[in-house]
Length: 216
Image (tube, rainbow, N blue to C red; front, top):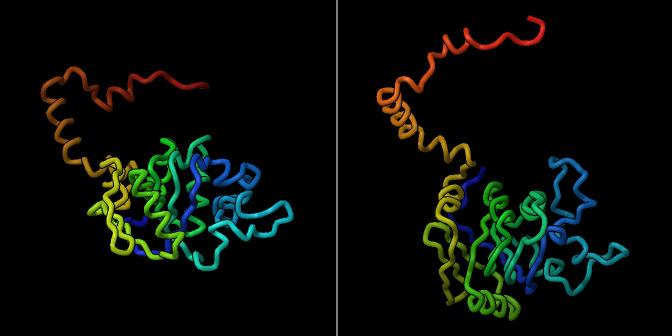
């Protein structure tokens, strides 16, 4: 997974609350393989009309926001079902960070596990940032190391779970995070073997005493 440390990019305002995972990617598009990419379906039913034509007033359809890697939304972003494809759709569209006052818990976990930063800003900061973007502001910097968002002359501190921050900074999965503690785990095992030898079966004996499988 690609590490996330700092990102300076075009930001797109999405001044809506309660954007749920079914809006992020409608279920009818989830039958295609992950390798085919989900980016074209991001917010499909909000971006396009029934005839498939782009809705002219929708922010992601604005040519000035083409290539946006940062999305700024209101509270409860990513609520709803647990579909991991919501994170896929954002990433495949080019979004690396979503700024909002709050997120759906499962969405946040899925986002982090795929290298997408869900950064929580206070509502006042989000409203100020949305106003700045809608007035013509474009480029925003999100620094995960300092936990700061910079837009023009304004700066705001954001929050994120410290374990998630560690995973994103290093590009780690949950397995990588566990392996980072390998020396401590090995030390615990060695100490516990010494302290409680009766709790540790000899591997060879354990294999010998295992019941025979079917047909034996």
